[in-house]
Image (spheres, helix red, strand yellow):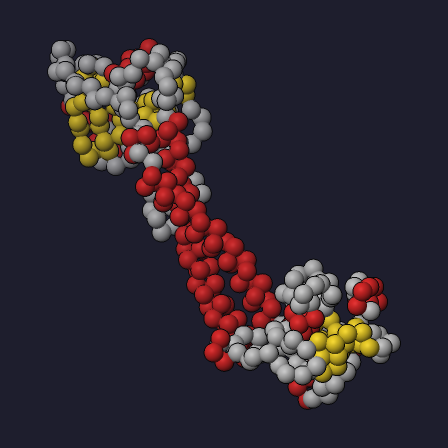
Length: 359
């Protein structure tokens, strides 16, 4: 047994080789990054193939022209003096349902007052419905307003009321009850657009905001970086162990004979077409050695004992075989390039599943 074999044997069974850990990490990173890449491709194609008008959230939204207030405006001196301590930023005149409204913005918040009485703006259900009708040009009947208790994505100053229209797209109208502003129109088709955007920009967390460079994007970017680095390491490691070779440097079919024996050292079969691994050479034409992983080095069912000069064990040998098995010259036949020589079956199951016609 070579010194290389002894050094590998001494570490067998202690812990998983770093290269196999990296391969496992590489596969999981590939799954995560590959899945998100697939989502990017599918959603990108959807945005290109679906008519933008189909995803429109505002097919029935109209802009109401505000008429000049007919009532006299109350003086604002007392109002400004009342909130002067908060640091007044702006006093703006607007209107709600043709009635003048003062919007007073301070450093703390914005408040709305009826401009004719300076009373805080307060809307009842009928007024909320009237505001929604002003922004809606469809023929569907509007439902009664529903005050939402869940968090919404809208920049509202007060509770948000939602009204649903009985039309073909299921229009939903959102009203800020503190200011009377129409926050948005949405429908089933715009919900699809929002879903596509969420998937495309990985906007899975509710607090991502509108920025693209959020935490999930950063995590996937780092995962993609590690995917590339681990792939480079694994590729170099496999070349170093002789598991990969360039096509123009690949060995042609070995000339010679591979003899296979039973556990009792009785001749079982001979093979002369030695191309690929030992497992591939033995199973060429029909399955003789059964495996579960198809030669991926994961199941350990293809192990054979080398009667003469076993090859140096690689990471898969170290992972699947015990130190005793390695010392006996047992290797995974799927992990080593076939050469002329003598090998023995290791388990009774291998002999039991060997084709009866070839015994």
